[in-house]
Amino acid sequence: MSTVDIARYADRRARLLAQMPPGAVAVLSTAPEVARNSDSDYLYRHDSYFYYLTGFTEPEATLVLIAARGEAPARAILFCRPKNIDREIWDGYRYGPDGAREAFGFDQAHAIETLDDKMAELLANAPSLYYPLHHASSKLDARVAVWLSAVRAKARTGVTPPAGTVDLLPLLDEMRLLKDDGEQAIMLRAATISAQAHIRAMRAARAGVYEYELEAELLYEFRRNGAQAPAYNSIVATGANACVLHYSANNAQSKDGDLVLIDAGCELDGYASDITRTFPVNGKFSAPQKRLYELVLAAQAAALEAIAPGLPYSGAHEAAVRVLAQGMLELGLLQGALDDVIANKSYLQFYMHGTGHWLGMDVHDVGQYRNVNLADKPSRVLLPGMVVTVEPGIYVRPAEGVPEEYWNIGIRIEDDVLVTAGGYTILSAAAPKTVAEIEALMQHD
Ligand code: GLY
Ligand code: MN
Ligand code: MN
Image (tube, rainbow, N blue to C red; front, top):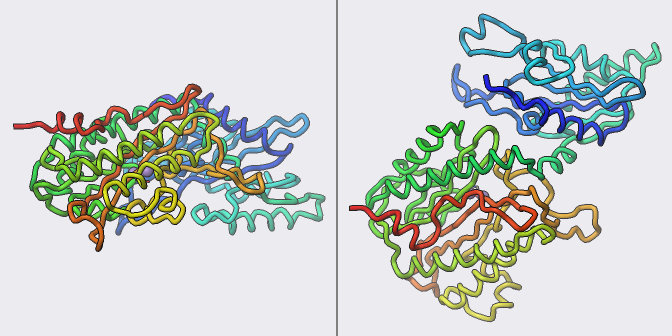
């Protein structure tokens, strides 16, 4: 069992509690276990919010926080699976309440079976209750209704139930959006492992290789470096499959002259990486492939230039679209004037997704993209500690009027980018990206 950085999680709980009124109660449960088939579960993955506040990765656990009121100090209470030697023989070690309290620094811990009874006590006279309100995956609403009725049943003894319920998640979303130094270090490591995996797949590529063979190289590299799992289903798309944005079959055989688009990243210690590279399966770009590749690379460079503290989040997408649209005109994919192509969005025929998203514990991480407190909801401003992906692409499906030499070419280049005080750092920089770098790496006998 590795040592838990108790102070980091305690600090997050304290920062959350400081945003709640005196005596208010917050409740957050971890993710359920999910059956894959009879007697076999999917690999367990904790809930990101719960993990953010606890560092605790066992299933069947709930955190209760109580804000300080008068003389009463703030409290963090964990409910978790009790020790059970029979179950531990089958499933492995579990901390149990006493072990968890000690190792993770909670003020109290109890067996999860006592949660309903204890909540009726803890919610008595609390001014408000914070929890993931109407959140499909947390399913706490029905449970909260039961707790609140139990408190109301004691009204004759002078007890009052919370006057209001408040959604807990928006507070946590804003906190999670800014990654602290510990999170940044894990994300750099996750992205570096993923970059090594992309290099491994490039080295293993040969005309005729099956997509799943390259996927196996990725998974091998993730796991041998200690990453627990892929952060999302790996996309390994050869030839025309690269034009399917969420391609996941990964079962086709490559042909000489195909490009391979790989969108894959590992999850390490609860944090995602998300990298896309596109390369020729035989190690050498054709002239049309190279023209489109250089265009996407130029779009990414322009998008990166738009990333710095104080600049709007939307700037990267706008910069990428401008470069891509200009290139589409120059290469004969589109006709017209640049400003018209941008205004009427005809570039969407070949570039139909956004240029990035927040990245963190979740691949598409939490946090608003707009300043919702202002009437016109402008794009929010970048701050040091935010992590975004920058992932322009181009996808050319066969169509009349589209030069045939570009048909079925799909290219995306995606990096993970930390906003820093001075600008940005590319966390995934270890993955080769220029035509020269990729062709040099793939030279083999
Ligand atoms: N791999 C998911 C994405 O690029 O957003
Ligand atoms: Mn992405
Ligand atoms: Mn991706």
